[in-house]
Length: 226
Image (cartoon, rainbow, N blue to C red; front, side, top):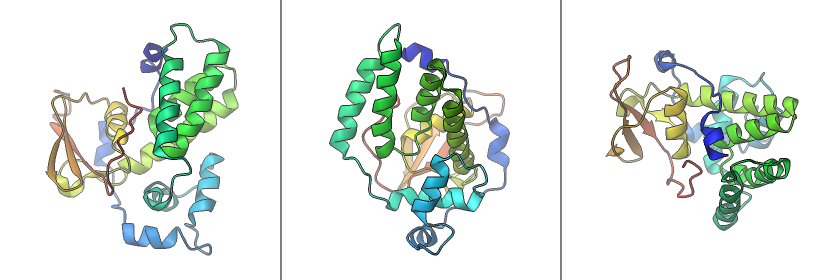
């Protein structure tokens, strides 16, 4: 089942996306806005719209949603997430997943997403399972959600220097974004400055040597990226 997942069709944004106009998150303003019930950026309201796959969310609202998540307490503990990840890995290792396996995988990702709410990979797992179960409308909603998150991340920086890093909230987003851009990591990540990672990539037609990421919080040790 893991091998099947590696063949999932992913959102291909292309290297040209890195050249788009960017908007660096203002973390102080985001923290203030998301806790104000009278603000259009109130986090619970944004989260509800996101969960409904509301594609009318603006770029600013999505930025507050994604980066505002670093100030929101997770509804599940690290221990609960680790246990769910253990069970999830056991399910997805099945060579020929049954409907019961797919349903179980969805159940475990429900828990994991509460710990990693904007994991693109978890969303891709869910899209695959839902499609296999014939739940197409739900799969389309999940896909719309991770597309919005990918676009929001890529709008935060060019990734071409430490000063223009792509801002992420979880270290797993690094490998997810590299995959979406069709870059292959080559070598070990470097930390040129605090909270900044540099990921060297293999030779590519764009001549990109590596991508810089900025993570405005301690990195979460639990990873769903295998």
